[in-house]
Every structure is written in C-alpha cells, then in structure tokens.
Image 1 (spheres, rainbow, N blue to C red):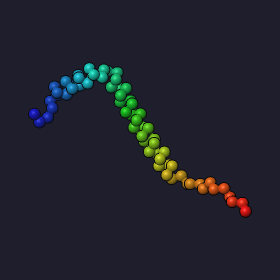
Image 2 (image 1 turned 90 degrees about the horizontal axis):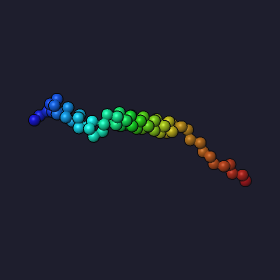
Image 3 (image 1 turned 120 degrees about the vertical axis):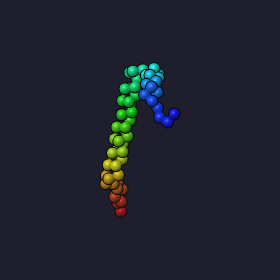
Image 4 (image 1 turned 135 degrees about the vertical axis):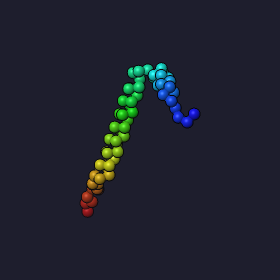
Length: 63
C-alpha cells in the first residue's frame, strides 16, 4: 500500500473528468493563470510605487 499504481491514477482521472467535464478543466486552469498574472502585476506595481519619489504638496505660506 506504499504508492499508487497506474490503475489508481486512471480512476482518479476518470472521476475528475466526470465531475468537471472536459471543458471545465482548461477553463479552470486559465482562471488560475490569470490570477497568477494579476498577482505578479500587482507585485510589480507595488515595487515601482515604492521606488517612485515622493513630492511634498505643501502650499507656500504667505506672510
């Protein structure tokens, strides 16, 4: 009972295909890929925002 045989994996694959269907798996993987891309984009935007110089917008005081 140490490792799974080929038959075990075939049964698992069949059950997954029955539950999700053939078209749902690629759609799900596409959504995962979009999520990863958005995460990387957000991290890059945060990194560039940290490096951007800050500007002090104080109004000049008139005496």
